Amino acid sequence: MNSTAVLVDKDLRIAVVGLGYIGLPTAAILAAQGVEVVGVDINPDTVAAVNAGEPPFVEPDLATYVSGAVQRGLLSASTEMPHADVYIVAVPTPFLDDHAPDLSYIKAAGEAIAPQLRGGELVILESTSPPGATQKLADWIFAARPDLVGSDAAPEFAHCPERVLPGKVMVELVENDRIVGGLTPRASKRACEVYAIFCNGQLLTTDAMTAEMAKLVENSFRDVNIAFANELSLICDRLGIDVWELIELANHHPRVNILQPGPGVGGHCIAVDPWFIVDAAPDLTKVIRSARDVNDGKPQWVLEKVLRSVDGSETPVVAALGLAFKPDIDDLRESPARRIAGELADQLPGGRILVVEPHIDGLPAELANRRNVELVDIDRALAEADLAVLLVDHTAFKGLRPAIPFVDTRGIWK
Ligand SMILES: NC(=O)c1ccc[n+]([C@@H]2O[C@H](COP(=O)([O-])OP(=O)(O)OC[C@H]3O[C@@H](n4cnc5c(N)ncnc54)[C@H](O)[C@@H]3O)[C@@H](O)[C@H]2O)c1
Image (cartoon, rainbow, N blue to C red):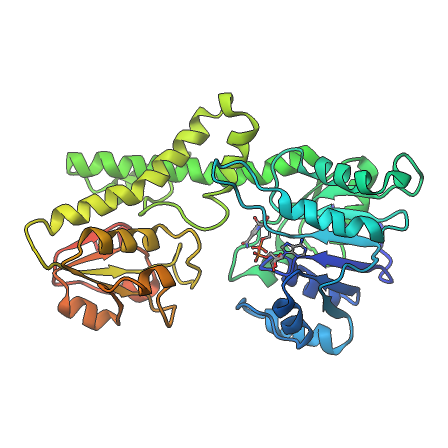
């Protein structure tokens, strides 16, 4: 808890390794508290943008924090790893083709940190990580610095996963409770002191492996619940029941809270993190794995439903509404809507796909390269299309009542 934390020495120098959606806001908010922060990134464009006080991506209030911290001389960025008292590692953790976690970014960060260590540093892993990754990071660093093994000057290690919501990062960084898991209790305590600099939420200490699992479990819980809703949507479609009405009614039970079905699960967290648990215990993860399969199978089901609806037309025109992986953002990463739009274009070579995505100015390359796909505004799409498929429940689509037949994967046109 914050209240038990020892006041941290603000003369600390903190290096944040990886200046993406997580690392840069963390660096900026630490610097806003008067701490000297060096951001490290392998991408020179990112480093140049931060040093110019301009974040390379959009997140509300982030630009104000970054430009203010850079102007005060508290935040700078570099492609070179500096010496620091505390290292916070926030590099990507994608999965490989077989869904095994790819820890190569964490390893590379550790190998860059190792030569800089002078003794007594704290290394915090913030990247979403499979169980055991913090220990692996320590092992990689000690392998590069055998002189530090077992010495009083050995660095200490902790895992502190991040749960911020894109679009509310600068608020949630401060307000959210955090789980802090050290490889030793002393490492947990030291990491808590770092987070107490800016975090008003509770700082809940545990061991590193439990902290790693906690983050994965949170996202798997949501994935399993969404898979349940998606499975219900298939059953209801066959039985002629409105799944959204059904879920709304069931959720009146005081202990039931079913999430909403959709076209599939996208993004870089919920669709990724459960695989790290599956990889850690493949023989024991029947539910978690099935949930992934159900959610990954939903785009194909939507595709087939649309194809059946336009069957018989040589030149169907389909309006595909939304490409983002969730409402009211411009992030298309791992988006099922994007996959469905591409598949529709391939399966309907004589037709046209009119994509409406109010949050982007141009189609991603794989859609732009298809000659039968066009990015258009909503009025034109609904005027020209034979059928609309609603893929993302953007606010901009909510008040519509299309006069043409439609497939609504989010239940907003009831
Ligand atoms: N974005 C989110 O909403 C979110 C939420 C919770 C957790 N996470 C987790 O946080 C971690 C970071 O995610 P992100 O969204 O910030 O990723 P990102 O892709 O936005 O940023 C990662 C940054 O790390 C840099 N990088 C890669 N290898 C490096 C290295 N060896 N040294 C220095 N920099 C390096 C990249 O150039 C990039 O700028 C991931 O593990 C992710 O799962 C993300």
